[in-house]
Amino acid sequence: MSPATLIVDLVVRYGFQLLGALVILVVGLLFATWAGRVTDRWLARRATEPPMRVLMVRTARIIVLMFALVVALDKFGFQVAPLVAGIGVVGLGIGIALQGVLGNVVAGLSIIFTKPFRVGEYIELLGVQGVVTTIELFSTTLAHPDRSRVVIPNRKVVGEILHNYGTIRQLDLTVGVGYGADLGEALNVAGDVVAKNPRVLREPAPVVAIAGLGEVAVRLAIKPWVSVADYGAAQGELYEAIVEKFRASEIPIPLPQREIRLLNGGLARLTDS
Image 1 (cartoon, rainbow, N blue to C red):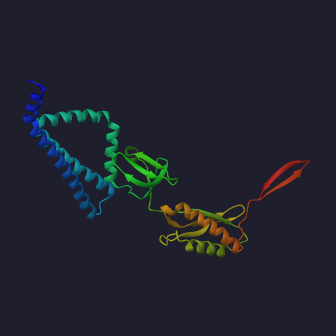
Image 2 (cartoon, rainbow, N blue to C red; image 1 turned 90 degrees about the vertical axis):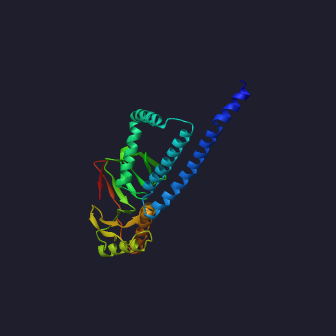
C-alpha cells in the first residue's frame, strides 16, 4: 500500500473521529470559560472572599475541561475506566514525591476557609510583615512598606503565631517636654495637632497622655490611629507639626546635656544631665 493510499485510508477511518474530538474539546473549552464566568458572578453576588472565588472558579473550569477530555477520548475508542485508574496511580506517586507542594495546597485551603487574615489587611509573622495582596493555594504574598514583595509558602503560615493588624494601625509617637513646661498646654497642643491631621482617624479616638518621667524631660505618648497606607507618612507629618507647634507656643523640648570637667591636671570627667 502506497503512502498516499495509507493516508487516505487513515483519514477516511479516523478523520471524523478526530474532527469530532477536536469539536468536543473546543466546545468544552468555551463552556469551561462560560462556566467560570457564571460561577464568578454568582459568587460575587454573595460577597465571597476573593481567594475562595478564584478557587471555585478554577475548580469549575477544570471539572468541565476534564469531562470534555474524557468524552473526546471516548470518541477514539479509549477505555476510560483503565485510564482513570492509571491516572490515579500516577497521581499517588506524584503526590508522594511532592509532599511539600501538597502541604502548601492543604495549608492554602485552610487559610481560605478559616480566614485568619484577608486581602488588604496588615499582618506580621515569621519575622516579616506587610499588607496581604494575594492568597493563593501555594503561597501568600505580602507588600512590604519598602515596596518589595514577601512571598510566604502557605505551610509556613499555618500553625505559626500571627499578628493581624487589620486595615488600620496605631502610631506610637513619643515627645519630651521640659519639667518646667505647662503639661496641660503641651497635651492640648499635641491633641490639637493630631485632630487637625487629615490622615488621623476619628474612630478609634487617639490617645494623648503622659507616658513617663525621664531624666531631663516628661515623655508624652501620642497614639493616633491611621489607615495602613498612611502609616509612614502620618508619622513624619505629626512629628514635624508637633515640633513647630511647641516652638510657636514656647513649650521647651529639652536636649540631653553633657558637662566636661578637667580635674588633676587634665583628666576629664564626663557628667550627663
